[in-house]
Length: 534
Image 1 (spheres, rainbow, N blue to C red):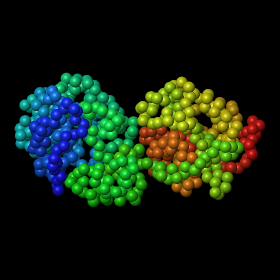
Image 2: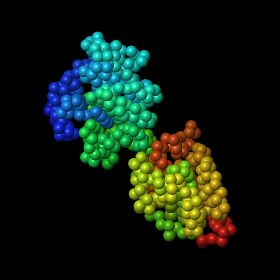
Image 3: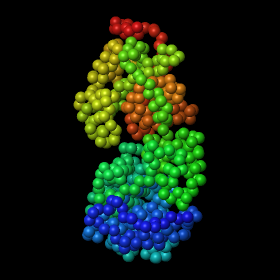
Image 4: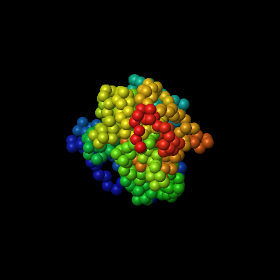
């Protein structure tokens, strides 16, 4: 049964001096409801707006400034899949192109690639073919993915992130489909920054499901929408709608599904969601895609490798004092000079009841910290204040400082070996060797990385590891995306892991050496240096 909007209530984002024009809103709603559905069981039936869709259309097209133009020029709608997103986007594109009384209106349909952008276009083209009044007046150029509304010479054109020209746009409307799939912000910036200045009321209609990349233009816009919804920011031109579950919500609860899927029972059956949930329960690898697509949650990666509740359960206290003099193994990951550098010590257990203890250390260039906090939305500054991260002078990592720091650690602990990624660490390795450390190269391929990565998971599940709940290491563990080769070997994938994982990689390397070499009290590098703790 279709749910209709019984009583329209103006949006709380209406500015003080704006007014709601019922005539303008009715016009937009009637235009859309003259169109037909194009797919599935609904094909050929009139496009009747569901209550939440009508609310959005009335809010956007009926809220007018004192000069009679629309108050909102950007609408951000984030919603789970199968809620009638493409239909609504196609209807808005046609309304902007044909129903907005704009001469030579330029309306663009944007998506990450041509195929994605074509989805909304094809729906719009079918809507035109099924509507005699539009079919007479619109010329569809299918090969160019363009349609022209002849009475006003307006057009609707598909653009993708991989093919667009940089200038010459005079935009009246942009429909961005699945904003979260944009590979970078270039197309978004070209389309939204200044290209609609010549028009009186351009509209940027952004519609998407949640994504996984928190460094993307979509997440940036999502954050802005969230800030406006929660009253932290004000922007009278921006209209935010987010249908999504909270972090704390139970993803298996049907009440949550109902709240975040406004078209549940209309465009998508609850049984479909139920089946998908059951499948995700059985297979943890599917949990993330269920949460992202069905509950519209921003999840870190398509497969979150480390179950964070299991990792958090290993937050046993780790004390430097108690570990003094003990045998341990280091893992060093020098990502690049402007990034975080991670050095992790792993102490093998002394007996059956003991655990592998992890002591991580992190450094970041002082000058780039503020910029990073803003860009990455990661609280480096808080971690620094709490003592979980150190800064080194300047805008690049100061290797000399780190070498001295490791040398200091060598007087405290019996560091048997330091494993490092072969790439890019030549000078530092030589310097550490000069200090008397045994430094071993560690391959980053499947062969070397797979055994300790699997071992790390096993130790975590068995609670045989202790990490003291270190927040930086926790964040990095949560960022890991895993690649698997045909033989079932696994390794952390630096390309796919959009956020930093250096600390996790350093932990895996150190763990490998700790498992292989253990606590045997053979000769130590410190014998030669005269420093030996027993």
